Length: 85
Image (cartoon, rainbow, N blue to C red; front, top):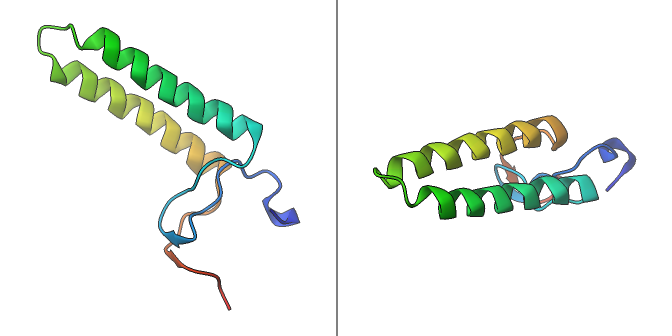
């Protein structure tokens, strides 16, 4: 990570659009909390009467929060195709 990216928790992917795995401990904490909350939510919400609707809403909500954090603490999102020359 160079000096321009010191505050970056989530680096951009080398190919495509989006972010890769976290590079700081803060990013890893956010990512692990997301995984734990999704897992716990699925385990508890699978017993609801309509089964799939609450699970989908819950996962979309958590994913939206994760994406918001990635936008704030990740590299600028753009289409990438390898290293720039």
